[in-house]
Image (cartoon, rainbow, N blue to C red):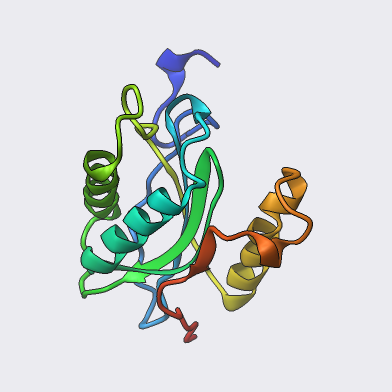
Length: 163
């Protein structure tokens, strides 16, 4: 498939579709995000980037961060709207990416990949299963002996699933 034939209706692995957040009859809205560094450079798994990300997420309250894990070249997080109706996810992401980039020491160009991957979860089992998978990323990457020992993870605010 050529790049010219890619449309929002038919996204591929290089061009994610960002569907609007759907309100499903007062059910919980939780979105799973994956965001990478530009060229997958290993710049994130440091105490300084961890601190800056937490500061940005806590100050940008239009979306609330739940569980997260920061890997050297990408991060995963779960988030939920902090207001209703939800503000666009893209503008919230742009805010904290800019905050972290400006506050960081020089990284030799842009810190972040332009796009991101987002999935709105449909049930609590999806939340639990995805967290179990991503929290083992440091082990699969050979970074630590157990997922509990990885220092760049946590919970900003507990996101509860309400069906």
